[in-house]
Image 1 (cartoon, rainbow, N blue to C red):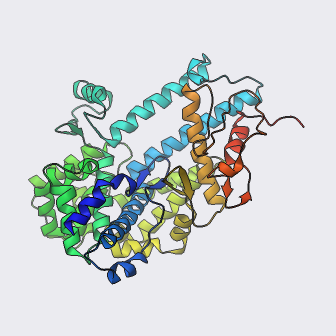
Image 2 (image 1 turned 180 degrees about the horizontal axis):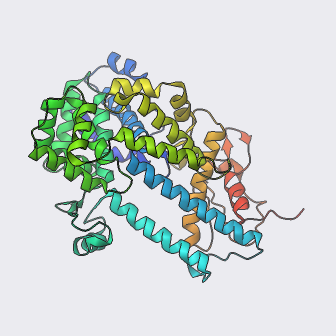
Image 3 (image 1 turned 120 degrees about the vertical axis):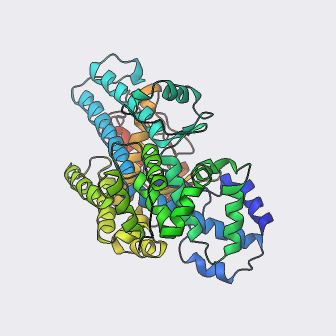
Length: 456
């Protein structure tokens, strides 16, 4: 079995999924989407076969990626960052629309423009991008200049008297925490096969030379394994989930800083035993002087509900509505976040299952494909939002805007552009099967004023 796991990990780039918490979109490395129904096939398979291992780990990947959805929808750090990203895209859309309505020409790239409104927006976008990297966490190898900048001038990003959340060559942040939560959930999906779980743990978490993509898991689960082992003895499995979830439950405080404070409190205080992870989390909040996640999320829910009063066609509003629904589920079922069985029951609720069915996901083989189980206004809204995000980022530095998903990329600039030559049959978003549909990319470009249809 260990050999089959090793073979799988060698080609992990084609298996594992990715999640962008600012675009709210899943990205699976392989074509099939796995579901809880896959367990029946797993239990019937020959355990000592490569097919069993591959299918088991792909199913675990399903749980890993959808755990990301849950955490992005129900942790304040992710919700705040996502809301800031939505607002930046709103600001961009309103800005370029105002230029169009005033009859002013928008020349690309925007970085070359001297308009005060654009310069202010660009500075805000740059700062937000930098803050996102710091919040997410990174290694010195990934971003050496920023690592040095943080080490020498932490006051640029952190309040006074805050210890830089650096562990060795890494800045600890949301990425490590989210990936570890996803990996714990993936392991929970394989509990029927302890040997496979142990093999995977050895290969990804405890190996001296860890699997390249696994440093976030190694950093937390190896670097802090003694503290986490103590938690496990007192609070069982959900205690680790409680710690990592709590580290993400602040709009303003850096997730890595919070995690180090939590681990410090555990080290310096006698803990447990606790009857359940929720009680353990509340006790930690009392020790640290923090609001409980339930209280903080209740306040944030009111903010989201206020934001959703924006016009229905405002890009990104669909995410706010879906996040509000997920928060309501968590508030009504607090144990959902800690226990896989309760979590799965929550995801099977009518409202959440509808979101997951209609939310688009992506995978790459020869070219990018966009998947969703059932097309709907929600699906289109998510795709439109991603289009706006791509257009915004391209418009800063590129002379021409391109569709991010079409195999034959269609350039669009700020001048009227005749699109009579576009090939809809080559577009993975605007074409489904043999039916020809409208091009979402050009619809969004036209709405923003980056494209004007040819006169008839």
